[in-house]
Image (tube, rainbow, N blue to C red; front, side):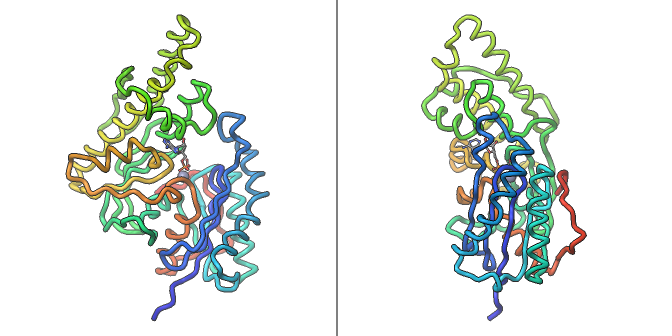
Length: 336
Ligand code: KG4
Ligand code: ZN
């Protein structure tokens, strides 16, 4: 029987330091250290993120190796996130991968973070895996994209945001309401107890497959400023309804665009990826859809930033022996 490759994967593109060990498509370990330091600043501070990655990377990699039960010498290749992301954060992972590759004399595989979010669906775990081709809505703190996934190494972006990402909209609106960062999970939590039809916010007027969320943020800001002038406790008193109404608007926008993309491509296998795919309303509405879609949602740990997804993307490149050498550099604006 062919031996499945063992890949050590490293992710450091934003504010999570993560390492995973994959054996073939199975994740043997997936350790994520989330940097708490950004909470008090209401968003990720790049310089602090980079420093925290430097501090965390060795313990996180050690923990991933220990938990997997393999030894360092069993590793066949090292996969790392080359981009997109924050340059200072990416540099830590890229430099670490380069040094380890030299020390262990094992090849390196560069991975695109956005492709990895999508390929998380292919991890062999207890969630169902889509067959190619499928349509993926990738919604994270930095990106909102509609991608036709033709094969593990062949993807086409057919639509994306022209300004803020969906996760950014959640985070910026929650910041207006003085909720801690990241606001997405909190809005999700409060929305469960609120009335989604309490307040109406406009949908953006953009191209058929384009997204825009900066107008929504401004309209929520103006609305709250007006209400607060009359009642300074407005946000506190109506938090649940505001959260439910904002969340409904964002999810309506996402699902409408998915409907257009599915109609245009004729693809009914619909996957979601990225941090916002953890959102309970998005999941529920997709799973209960009336459009004949077969919906794919990976396990929670593989939705937000994690190295398991870098490992599976690395696995597909390993199969084709697509490696990079020591001249590789981080690319903060890497595109699919
Ligand atoms: O993919 P991710 O972990 O990091 C990036 O690559 O950006 O996504 C983080 C984003 C944040 O904006 C966070 O607020 C959002 O995902 N998020 C959520 C939920 N969980 C995380 N947004 C809405 N509902 C959630 N349950
Ligand atoms: Zn991400």
